[in-house]
Length: 210
Image (cartoon, rainbow, N blue to C red; front, side):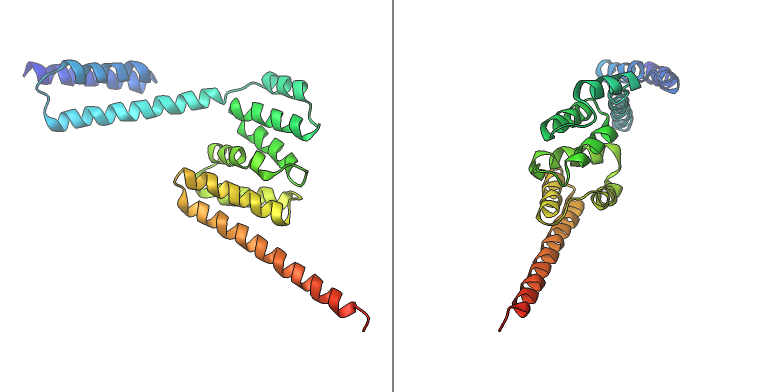
């Protein structure tokens, strides 16, 4: 009976902490309860483990959000150090700085500047995919990337390679359905380029003097 009372009181205290946003304190109580209370029924033990998992997930989310909480002054400092324009390496460095500080939208804008320039997609495709996944949901990833491609001058083989590299990145994270969409889009881009090349070749041949 004493054990049940102790468990009930401790759970109530932990939930009070949680309701006030004190997630770490709540987590500490639940973990202490699991470690120090003997003879807990299996159902109660599983309930406590579930609470612990939820709290850990919430704390991880808060930590991610805080890592992205960068002030306008910090943004200006990054821009000042690297400049809004510049060569490919400068843009890559600035994009990486934004990426690593969790300012994903700014990083995406910088990666967009590389499209259509003499910068192989291999240099930024994985990082771009990571930023898109972090900033948007898995469900909207493909649409967001397509929007970026529509607004960029990237075409042909370079576009196909970017799609393919992003597909590899997502496949490596087990987002197989989106990866397959990206692979198909890459293939269709190459196929369109091949058809265009054949048409040009055919027209060139027709215009040759007999």
